[in-house]
Amino acid sequence: VSRLVLVLGDQLSEGLSALRAADKDRDIVVIAEVMEETTYVTHHPKKIALVLAAMRQFAKRLTQAGWDVRYSQLDDTQNAGSIVGELLRRSEETGASDVLVTEPGEWRLINKLKHAPIKVYILPDERFIASHQMFETWAEGRKQLRMEYFYREMRRKTGLLMEGDKPAGEKWNFDHDNRKPAPDDVAFDGPLRFEPDETVQEVLSLVAARFGEHFGTLTPFWFATTREQSLEALDHFISKALAKFGDYQDAMLSQNRFLYHAIISAYINIGLLDPLEVCERVAEAYDNGDVPINAAEGFIRQIIGWREYMRGIYFLEGPEYTGRNALGHKRDLPALFWGAKTDMRCLSKAVEQTQQEAYAHHIQRLMITGNFALLAGIDPARVHEWYLAVYMDAFEWVEAPNTVGMSQFADGGIIASKPYVSSGAYINRMSDYCKGCAYKVSQKTGEGACPFNLLYWHFLDRHRDRFKDNARMGNMYRTWDRMDGDKRETVLSEAQGFLDRLEAGETV
Ligand code: FAD
Ligand code: SF4
Image (cartoon, rainbow, N blue to C red; front, side):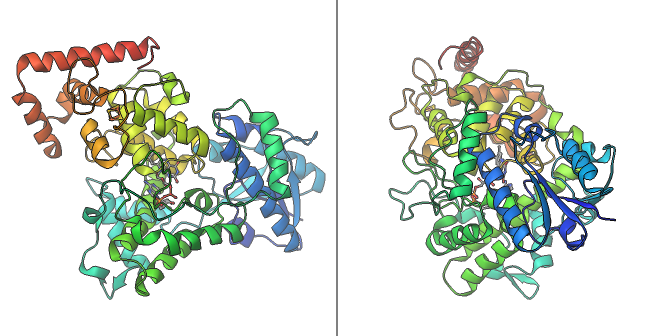
């Protein structure tokens, strides 16, 4: 008898384990657009459009390759509205009794499939370089799960940027070279943009009609939706931007949203690009002498290091991870995250770009929106829902550890050895946001003082017991303690005043 092969919206790879395990002559591929998956958080319309368009393109490709594909469009009248519902419907329609699926990247869906009233075989997702077993073995018995050590193991395993058993350039990590402030001008005009074809146009109409009220603008829509386009986008980045990627990785500019970033995370995450193939191309550019080591190493570390490590943590820590709240933060997410007016220019620029592009780069996510949420004591579960909704590349296995762990310190320090917090000085050094802001970054207290300057000390003060003995934070506490007592009181009461205004829904 035939089986159903379920392919999810972020599993659009021909080499997928479930497809490899299936028999093209007998088994039936099920791909389903369902309301349940498009609405469990209010995803950005661009993100929904990307996933649905790429699913339709992929289904066509599988059909051409000879598969029997049963594709359910969102507005099909028969559509059951959920993944499990669609499996049951297709099983009845075809007589197929078992389901093959590659492991979803989300506990929610894994549990639904495990408890479905049809037999589901979940196969390992082999598009990652580290298997669950490899990560567990690495983590076992370690007191701290620092990314850097995992990363070195991954370099050895893949052989990327290795000269024998030594790292290329004689150092494992060139991060020190990768913190240059924003350049005056950027010699890269951003990611490759694609004209929507007929398939994409249809999806755009559907998304506009069904999800038009979600936060985020749908058009212009220029993302790649096929593997060929994604490969073109990757080549474009490697030949035009990679050389400078390292230098300006942490910089932020209000007039340039993409700087030298790759804008390929979503393509990798939905399966259009393979992470190892991406890294091999980058290593090749280094071997050919086209890009410096700090660029190639910095980039490869993000993928075989951070990306794989985040997934390892997500699966190691289990389904409760997204609910962690080690610092006991309770505040609701302020309306400014959904585009309400704020005088804080850095936040307003980061949110505006998120709304228009469904994209912000790592330092904007970590040191602008993330930093603010952490300093202001916002409930990490609300922060997590926001990040999961608004970014085109947001899938829980990678978004949750980045948000809950790295950015909000809500896991109590599994991922980050200290909280990523800063005052306005860091933002000013790395960006041009402060010029033209209603607040003054150099001002520490009083009318017009930058809120980051106030909140930073408020955060350190209220979490003193937890962080005072952290070796990496001693300097901060010493600076605070050296401050004159009256000054400290002023800072704390002005910070509290700011938080009260935020809580009351006033424009801050
Ligand atoms: P580049 O800066 O050009 O980096 C190259 C590639 O490295 C990326 O495409 C991505 O695949 C990988 N990468 C870089 N940093 C990370 C990281 N920390 N974790 C995993 N992979 C990384 N990334 C996601 O893919 N999905 C998310 O939902 C997501 N949520 C985040 C939430 C927060 C609070 C933070 C601080 C970071 C988050 N990241 C997430 C990581 C990172 O911000 C994005 O991967 C990156 O901005 C994507 O843009 P890019 O392709 O231009 O990346
Ligand atoms: Fe942001 Fe403060 Fe700079 Fe304004 S002054 S842009 S609030 S860091």
